[in-house]
Image (cartoon, rainbow, N blue to C red; front, side, top):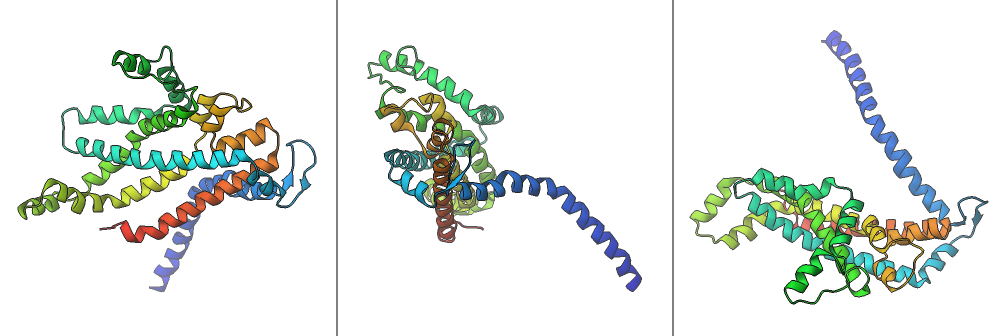
Length: 304
């Protein structure tokens, strides 16, 4: 027995070495591109630096400066409105789409591909297509609205419509991924539960709210967490729609988000300290929201 144990120990050590070897690329990549930049950004938020010269320590002055800047208020407001509008609308529509796909309709595989297509296209390309579709003069959307006798707004150049336009694009492009995840969750629910509920005389709405939704809460929790984090980090479609960051005006102010502000401070104004301070604010905001979500999951997430 002792000889067998001694033989197994070198094998276990060898297996652990291979395990560490396989996970090392991920660990190294996370350290280089994730952990180290976070601490570097926190340190840089306490400095005044233009990206080229000597950095000067200024303490919390950068934070005081950005919090007194009116642009940060626009960015924070727009980011929160965008995020907490896109996430629930996307989840509700995705729930409906996933339920339809789960009914076993004809050409279900084709519809899955169609719904998922926006997720394999670069967000900038998606934004450019929608920028053409929403063009006030030659866009298809306004042509259809005019044909129906409805008002055709300036989706891109009107401050009142620029943020709703961005929300529309994000909802459209996010339905496919969310629907596929929810569809996987639906297919994991045992048909016996539905059969038992029908035998007990439960209606369709009762089955949906008492069986389907509770058993989908793990998927909904995952999607809501990821979508909120992605929503707070939105940049590409904003930049594509409003153009260059150094072009100010009411349209830009109505569309600017926190990441857009970070980009402007860093690469337009060449103020890395202010940009890092705003990045720290964004990081803290995401951490707080994520912490609250994980704290509240015990009250509504059902791991059956």
